[in-house]
Image 1: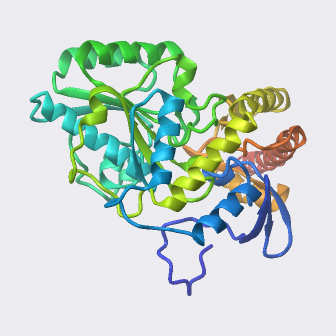
Image 2 (image 1 turned 30 degrees about the vertical axis):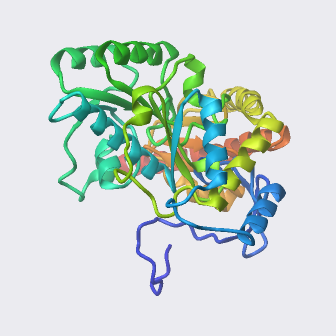
Length: 409
């Protein structure tokens, strides 16, 4: 729906709605219509829109100091690095501007790790249907042919395996001596809200220890309380070598981080990696404030409680729906899988229910509500989705009857 006169590149299939104001889990468009946000900017605005404390910090820091470059010490960066390492059990942090950049950093650490081990052509295990970003390296690590199409040749050095299948990883270990790392999402977001089993993640940790691989988790979407723990891997009680985070860390202000521990924490030497804007005073002060609010308001715990309520309510309301084949998720990261393509539901949800949703893998409705939603808003999401899918089922029934009547002549 991008206007023909627009000077913007056509990289997005935009909906014909322009939002001008937000508050918590609510948004208003340029016509004054109110909407309920069930995607939080794709897991970004977990504290909701226009959070007064975040707004105040941005204004104050913008009037004090925005940028000096990483040539100099940045106190807010030091503070945020310490906070994140304390939360995760990691030792060092590198700050950048996005999840893709954080994952690029992780991939470079894996390559360095391989070369330190005298592996000439290091390989990184990645997963089918995984998603790690849109740079050439992270796109090469991604398991989605549709997103990769047209950008070949992709970078070599990736070994793609089925998700949540430990036997496939064991077999790869026997057949591929050049493996140096594993990169995985604890819950595949773009892959259809698929949750890795806790035992699977523990077995991955054991395999990495046995073979000297780095265990690297992409927590860009699952981190910052989204799954009901501060970070998704914590449900399995494992430690990591490398972890990436972004999205909700800035609640809408761009920031990403790559965290490392053990040998991985000391792989970089000055000049081997960098970022012009990464870790600037404004971004890192916002990140510290986000952590303050999440800890004070116990938002990871709240996400677990609200997620359980949302999942149970969806199963009750839609479990018997003729087109719903699965309802799954963890915390406030929920997927509703249908038996057919449902990408058109994004536009219909806006127009018919004033509800923001996304559809991934073509047939999975993805819900990522702000962690600050109240119980009534969680219940309202279910009511609006039930109405939306009921109207879809009715339309499908009419269309199928018409097709059958036409076939019968």
